[in-house]
Length: 224
Image (cartoon, rainbow, N blue to C red; front, side, top):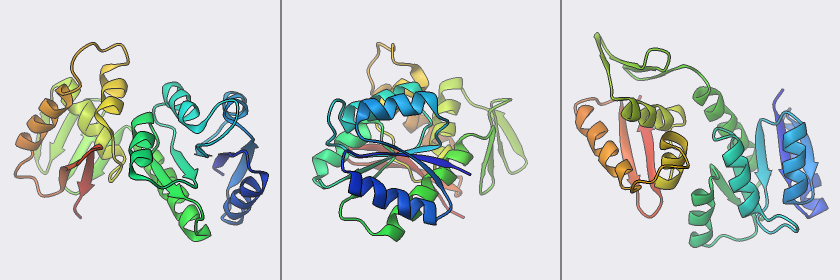
C-alpha cells in the first residue's frame, strides 16, 4: 500500500488531508515543517509527498528542492492557499509535479494523488509503451511497429523521461539536472536542440507529441 507524506504546519489541514487519503486506501505519515518532513522521508519509505509552501524552519520551496535532489522520480504535490501563476511556475522550477490550491475538493486531491502514483509506477519501469512505440531502457532501443533503432543517449534519456510521465510538465532546468546532471556547465537551451531533433525523428509518428508549455517547459502527450 502506498505511503504518502503530508507536510503542513496547520494540524487541521494535515488531519483533513490524511483522512481523505486514508479513506482512499492509502497510508499516511505527517510532518509539521520542512525539516521534519525531510527527517521523516530519510527514515521512512515514502511513495509521494504532499507539501505546503508556507512552513516554518524549512519552507516548501526548499523542501521541494531537497527532495528532488535526493530522488528525481519522487512524486511531489504542492498544496497551498496561494494560486498566483508565478508561484505555480516557481513550484515547477523547484521540482513539483502538480499543484493544488486551498480550499480543495477532497475528490480532486485523491484523484491527483492517484494520478501521480500511476505516473511514478510507469516511470519506474524499464520499458515504456505508448501506442505503437516502445522505449526499452535496458537496450536503449526504440521500437516503432516493425522498425527498431537506437537514439543518441541523451535523446533517448530525454524521450524516456518525458514518456515515463505523460502529461507532466518538466522545466528545462529539471531536465538538465536529471539527464545531464547538476554539474552540467552548458546552456540549458541544449534541451531545445534535443527536443527539436526528437520532433524531427518522430514527425510521422502519430502516437505522441512533445508539446511546448509556454513559460514552463515541455510535456509529452500520448494519442491512443
